[in-house]
Length: 380
Image 1 (cartoon, rainbow, N blue to C red):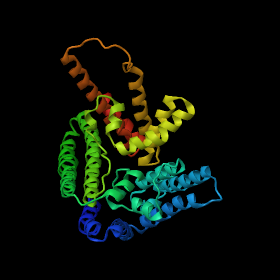
Image 2 (cartoon, rainbow, N blue to C red):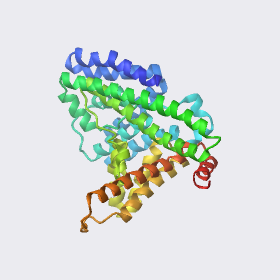
Image 3 (cartoon, rainbow, N blue to C red):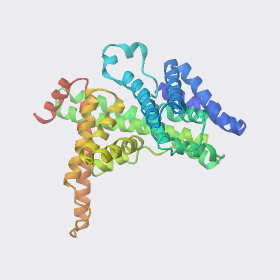
Image 4 (cartoon, rainbow, N blue to C red):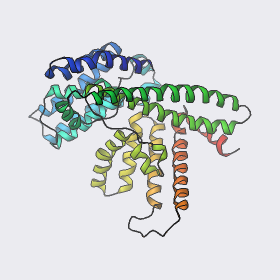
């Protein structure tokens, strides 16, 4: 929470005035320099890691001695290598992350760099220079708390941005909305109040306590994540940059496929474009492509067996829905309105509980605790 407070304060007091008061060509570069300074103070490792990987990912495409294929392979490899080193289980178990730390925003900017490398290989990016690339990566509102915005959209907005009082006001409202979501719903109601209720229920009603704990974990993760995204979107609007929406009421989705089109949209769409589509083109196997995309989605959070299983469970849920859904060309029999509403509500209920139940594998610290909770839920 302190990190979020500092990001908001620094963005509003430091970045926003510089983004409008300086001469036009200095505005966003100054925002990038200030962002780098903020990171150097908050975490020197984070600033150096981002600068190094950014320089390599851009510089490799300048080497004429390499073929385009080798440029993109080496660019992606160096970003992924750093990502795996810091996000895998091994350094965590060795205590290395405790002393060294994990670079702030690592997962976000790694996927931005991979997106950049692939699109540059495909020659779909606008003409730009290294400063434009650094401006894209060293953009504080989205650097540490997402979403995973894409370079062409950012570059377009950076060239078109003009002062807009309505947009600025919308940004302030969005920051307030996201902050209230985090503090009031996430921290006060779910983290504190509901946790106390669960604690009092545990001795006499362990099954109910386990169920509520599961619901609390999944909903709090969504509230916190969505609130951070709201703040990031609002801070970006203050500077005149639009970034994509990241959540659209996912818990109202009636199936898991729709759920992942609404939950962490920037990540799920990234996995669709850069994992699912290439795998489908190579293998012609939708099952493998779906599982591959959802495994990457899980590992984005952390390179661990628990997140690997969690991603596999998301993929399995999507595949089950595809297996039993009504074919698009099949004629639908007339049903009363109440029947459709009941079936939709049932789908929402099942989807919500499936997602919450799968989150059990990342909520608990080990597989023994997962097994104990499942026993409390279903064997009592």
